[in-house]
Image (cartoon, rainbow, N blue to C red; front, side, top):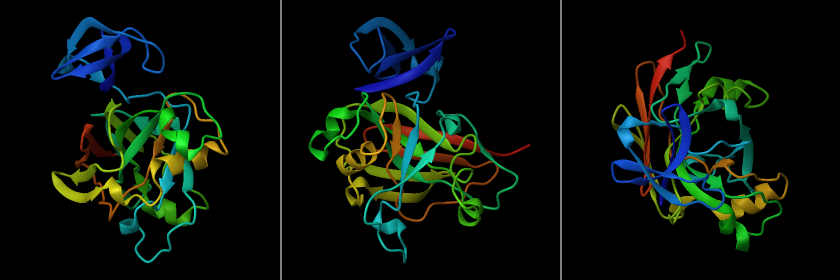
Length: 251
């Protein structure tokens, strides 16, 4: 099922995507709900990020094609992205004046279903509600020069996600494509993840409690492309949809 989180008539709701329309859910998808008859055309609502995470985790160096001459990590390389960096489909990625190079990183994003801690790999998938498209926007010079990645990965607008949450997906064999101005810059299957989703959930939940709606960006393949003022960046994942965001230089 594709689930959208959207704004319509001043109210934020969740809904089941049905073709070109969305049917409102009676409650959030993290508990019991029904699909109601209250329907909107998709193009009449504002799509929002598909969840409201208490935290966003991200995995670095998780595709061999992204390693270049670096050694693969022995365990998942985890970092935080702030919830205030989260934006939805169609919202603008702001390229800060102070960065010399801003890259797009297309990623499959896990959305957690319930509160969990110390999850085993065998039980990990029970705690996943769904998946969405994400862009781990990265200011490369800040990433290289700063002592940590607090602004390189978490400046405002640096975590686009959407357009929908897909609850019925085999996340380990889908095609991920990132385009800038319609040109493919990344194109790879999630088959090539170094650490799969159960491993990521087991590892992260060993140290932090995961909450409903929390997001985990699972890593990016290949060579990311640079985003400049006026560009449009798209992240498309087979079975989920296409996340599109314009890019604008900070005024």
